[in-house]
Image (tube, rainbow, N blue to C red; front, side):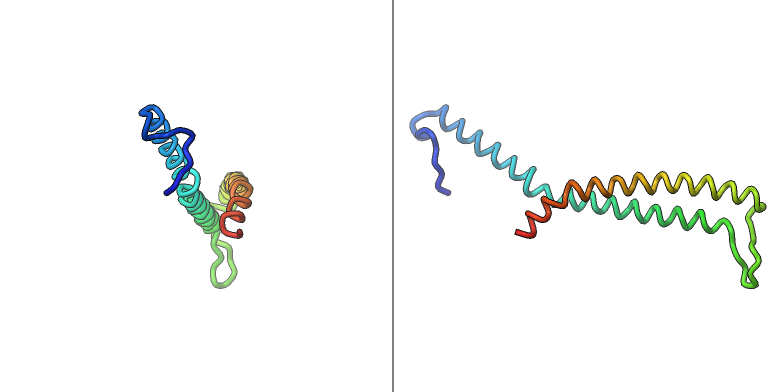
Amino acid sequence: LPSLYPCDWKESRSCFIMIIFIHFLGATFVNWKIIGFGEVFFGMVSRQVALFRHLNHNLNQILTSVRVSGNGTVMYRVNKDIDHIYIKQALRKWIIHHQKVMEQYDRLQALYSWPLFVHFGL
């Protein structure tokens, strides 16, 4: 590839080393910023999907502590009061975790929305 160098690299060894160093830094920058961009994005999105699936699994576990039989009677694991206390505590923890996951989703969306638009849209 033709390049424009500020000095004659064939005449000076220090100029040749400087040019090699600049090329090395440029190649490293391209790998970190351009090529690694997609992998980091897909890794973060995969983690976010896993967090949403984990939330779904936890909510299903919380809601299965109380069962309704075929004839419409409510069946509790222990008794009504203990199960309601368990459900309230578990739902509060689940809601806090859900809010943290959604905050992370919003940060991820704010971070990647414009770069992805520029990368794929233009």
